[in-house]
Length: 199
Image (tube, rainbow, N blue to C red; front, side):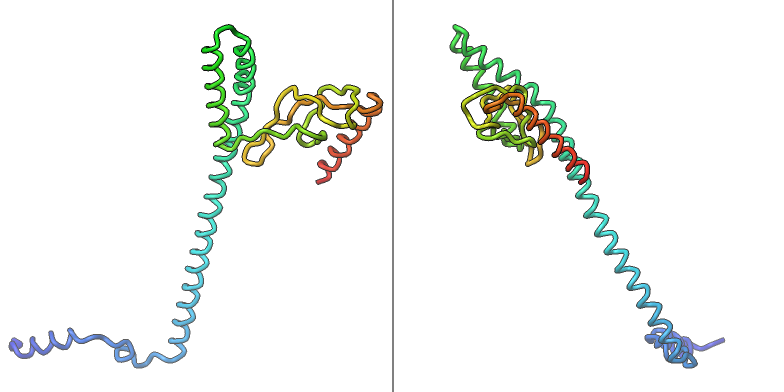
C-alpha cells in the first residue's frame, strides 16, 4: 500500500504546467510548420467568412431600405388621387356661401399637403418650357408665346424623394403652326423613347 508521502508527490507532479515540447520531444520542426500553416489557413478562412457576413449584412440593409422606399413610393402614388380631389373640393368650397366651411376645408387640405411634403413629396415645376421627361402635353394651342411654352396645367405632376411619381399634364403653346408643332413634339418624344430603349 502506497504511503501518504508518495501520494502527495504524485499529486504535486500532476499540478505542474505541461509543456508540449516536454511531452513530445520527438516532434520535429516540420510538424510545427504544418500546425502553423493549418492555423494560418483557419485564420484566413475565419477572416473571409467574417468579411462575407459583413457584406451580407450591408446588402440586406440596402435591400430592406429599397423595399421600404418602394412601399412608400406606391403609397404616395395612391394618395395623389386624394390630393387632386382635395384641391377640387377647396376650389368648390371657396365658391360656397359658407365661408367657415370653406376655410375649414382649405385648412384640412393644407395640412394634408404639408404632411406629404414632409414625407418627400414635391411638385414638378410647370413654369417655362415643356420638358418631355416631366410634362405630358394634353392640349397644344396657338399662342403668341414661344413654341413649347407651358400655358396652363391640367393636372399637377409630382416627385417623391427625387423620383418621378407622376408627370404634369399641361397645355403648351404651339407657336406659329399647330400641326408642325405637334409633329415636332411627337418626333422629339419618339427620339427620346428610342434613346431610352437603347440605354
